[in-house]
Length: 309
Image (cartoon, rainbow, N blue to C red):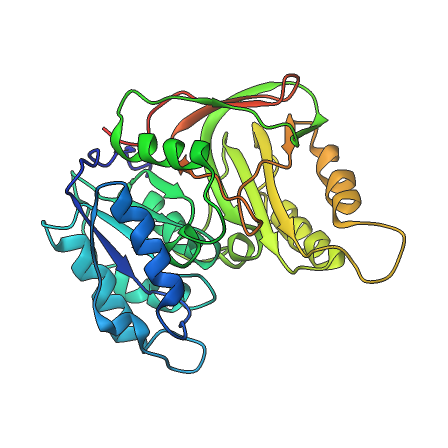
């Protein structure tokens, strides 16, 4: 049964954003403090506990602690938004505990990417939330922030009338045409791992966004082939490809771009490539769950709905 899509209430200056760590651990707080400063300059209050610095092998603490932290942030009415600390691995281990969360008529802003793709898929399918694919606390303050990107993020978080049409010089048309549909997707390897789970990606009539990090071309081929064989690519309206960072082979006369283009063009849907989002140096945020229009002929992505209400 389809769950109606609901937009989180807009943020206002002075609202509290919680930082949670549902995936991998960090060493030290220097990177985090840069992200906190970034958000505070926007006018938000930031809250987190020392629990986010816990480490259990490749996880930011044990499953119970990570799930409890996330659920508390979702249920605490004084918290208006939730942002992940970092990606890595671990979100899928929380799914059994998170399936008990009941639908909220007033959801919260939730932002992250990479391994947090798992949580985006769950929140969309289980609760109907519109969520933000975008930077996390450890990446927000990395490098020199683009004024345009910062303004775009602030508008996504605070303005119910904000419906931009985004176009970037590096974007490429791999297959021409126009398409409209709800936007879904995230990290390709995490999406592939969702098949057969309670949060399995729903691509029926959707615009699919894909990106990834450090996956060799043959692994990209394998994962996209799995999506195709599982029926996830047959009814797409269109595709947006983000950054495939460090995915080129160390040997051979082909690139990740060559492999992706060859496979995906066989779907005969509009395809826009090189949208600056994902694990690369730029990670432009965008809402998952809203309707968008892509025009591959002029290389633009238009938001037909806002991220917040």
